[in-house]
Length: 545
Image (cartoon, rainbow, N blue to C red):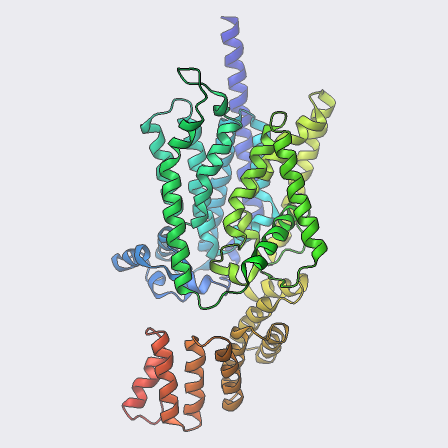
């Protein structure tokens, strides 16, 4: 009886600790991220996902819902983010603050559920709370939360952490009924972002630690390794199908490849090391990191050595520190689809991205929460106090740095001015800064930004198109044509450039030639409304379209 009472007291204390930790996590997220309610849309995919997408700005409609499940716009199939954006418009209209707060709400929920799930898997409440605090407040996660277009990260993360929680429930007494929530969360996650394909591999890592399922034996005294793989087979099959659909969809929409395979592998190795560095030293963060096509050999060698050394340590100490093995290979596996070895989305032109760390960093956070106390602090009271003080200091530092980083996301100009100040040769940031400046009527500054982008990367077609557009506005049609022609010499499938040439020729009175260019724009993009309007006007013989 006494033993039962003691167990009850312990359980009650654990519950109180869990509740306190969850409340602290919620308050910390709100304190850091509440300012986004006054932030604007960012003209860097927000216009594609929300403000200039006719399907989305119509709100939740039958046609919009059908479109969300059919479209592969922006490179891959992601019906749930589209539906989420439509729901936001339905509720908030185009008030950016409401859209931002939905992202914050998802991040808050993801944080709390991750804490609950890891607590259930490991039984370590305060270590799980520290891990969840790092997830909630690390500066590298600001981009995913503060960027409305990154809703897919919030949603895939949401289904990921619920799947972990459901898996913790499933392994207590495996059954088909308990397995189905895990499978359903996996499917919904795949409908949010393709990187969800790595979940079954992570579940196998969790089977090793903390669940210890690889050491279990069956009725005949044999290890149940085959069973563990077999139960994940439906998820692996769905992951393979999702990967194939994503790959072929992306390849069908791509006109050029930015780098050979060898270059992409080199970039992946160096980027892995940079992600590790930025976990410990999250400074000079940027919305975009352009690919460096000339990576020094020493940087590749050092990066490879770091990765191989940590991998070897994880394998060598797999018995002593099993969480090092699980956490490290969690990070390596989940990050793999975002390394650019297989290009899709923005990986065509950028080396890495802060938002790619949203789920992969959980593996590294697990190591930080578990390894440091076990390896160096042991269990003496004084060292426990030191560990608690260190954890509080680290969380406070993350909050402070994240709060500063968050301010750069208040509008497009601020964001890209910061990007060009903390990176080198960032032609993408200069181009997007130019676009934002042009929309504010700051034409001279915009022109300088576009010229800088083209000077850094003479093969960057978008900068030439933007220069052409600006020169058209300045009534310099021939100079505009020169820039549009530079763009199409790089990529012949640019409807915007052909349309621009058509407008420039029309302003010079060359109607027949202009019509030919409008036709070329429409041949590439049948939905190019401006080109269709000009062509229709020309064919109807109006003099002033």
